[in-house]
Image (cartoon, rainbow, N blue to C red; front, side, top):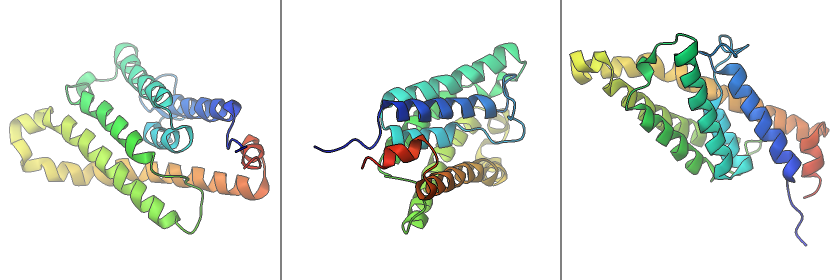
Length: 195
């Protein structure tokens, strides 16, 4: 009989942790404690849910939570609604594309293939960012006034600012997973011993 790698308590633990980090780090909501010091977590959350949780239920909840926080911030925290345009639908679609493509990655633990995994993750995050940012840009006043003439300046200004932090989050989590595997600290270790 083939043993399960993770039981349902592992899924709950990971899912609750992911949702908690999204709430704590989403920068424009009043609930956020760390939102102005840490980069928000939805992109790494989607990737982690694709790698470790693998079910659409989890990504649906993550996307709904992110959209709910955005709308809450607009309705109750006075955040400008200029980011909610028809392009926002492509942001949501890009989240699902990221989830679907990330499902082909087996683990982000540090190993001999880590460089390939992180290069692939960087490309996936870049593609998602490009889709979301381009769809947003097309609906801005800058595009209305200047078309694509300032587009590459816009991309170069925001690309590394918005993509590299997601890689750092994933690197941090991969270090935690690798240390956990070596030293057998938590619920994650008890699950990996059942292999």
